[in-house]
Amino acid sequence: VEAILVNIFGGIVNCAIIANGITKACRELELKVPLVVRLEGTNVQEAKRILSESGLPITSAENLDDAAKKAVAAIRK
Image (cartoon, rainbow, N blue to C red; front, side, top):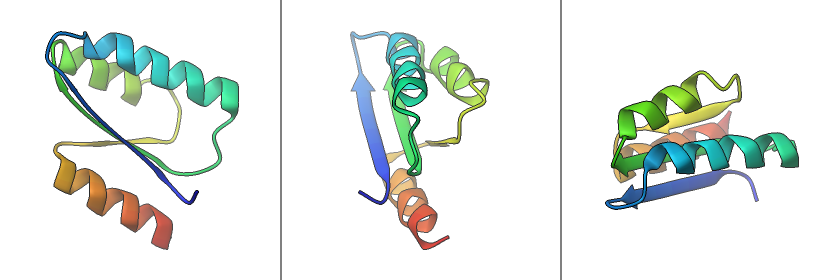
């Protein structure tokens, strides 16, 4: 695995809960590959804040196309 792309469309699920789970997993696994996350849905702004303030090397994306481009770019670095 060279990169991980997470694409969540959480219509009912609170995206902040997903963001907290992602950050917890990254810390527990000591993730060594680039992680690109695209979230859309309930409480998405809070979720983006959680990811950006986590101190982890997580790249946020605005849509699936943006996420795919960022994941490929991360691999090429």
